Image (cartoon, rainbow, N blue to C red; front, side, top):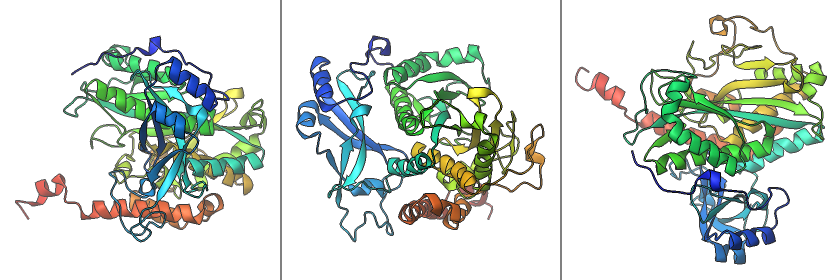
Length: 455
């Protein structure tokens, strides 16, 4: 295990406030803080940050124009493989350019790399049109619908990951969920992660060992949906980068080992009035019930947006703390959806179906779209499993067991077409089906171990 000498996040103070940042503010900070490199990035469809590093002096000359990047960055898989059938960018149209335009308000220094700063960006065409298939734009489209209905969605993100050695094995063996003692073994890096996130303006509510060897859960503070999505993209990137600086790996793979706990991405959510004064889930039970019903009605159809990989579906096993069917209850961790209602301003719904490899923009968009679907159609939830073991309910609809099945449900979903464009859906389905085809052709170690000698 190696460590690096670096600026402690304790020494970092945000140089400028996070509201109403202008390019002039950024230029002044670059000079005062001796920033030499500006990183400009956006999340691709799998949720990986893509972009460019630009010398600070050149950034100030070209910032209003953005940085030019090949449009393939929105048309490939998680390993950057390109393939036929993606209209946005292909060999047929020559893989043209797009422009990543910085979002000034996301400017941050990188606390663990002195002299570097970062901005999120949004992809635009070379003609100045926003690319609506980009994940951040997809979420913005759903939020526009919510705003038009008079709702302001608030989100809390809860993600799990494993901390692994250089040999990609867990840093300790065994399960010690919530153990402060075992958590101390990870504190050398978790402390650094928490402080770095705070310096980036990403408030952490809590961190703890989870139900796997050296598995960690971190809860991000509740906030506006788009802000939390931005923060979650940066959170995942920061955790991985800080781990690598210590010679470690942080893995958000949903099911790294068949017999160990999987990594989930739980989405806590509520609707508020536009001024964020009243939690409508507390003030109006009908809104909460309709929203809950929408999450349940679309749970199977929208799962491909929340669990985007072949591996994610190996996480859904009975009595694993990951849901296997469409069910709901109160404070019940056997269900797919916890309705934590009637508790004042903290009233919320926790949807537990997401995998930790989900694109934060798309999983949050799917959850909000599902809830709005329930409201606009005045849906009612079925009977709950308030105090029962939902795994034992033979009448509950099962979640799809494979990525292929989930993609077919999404493909046929009328609810999805109410909130997502046909162009985006076909784009997303094309990438997902490519993933399935790669897996179907792969020959695994399990197959060799089982069949090579004895078949």
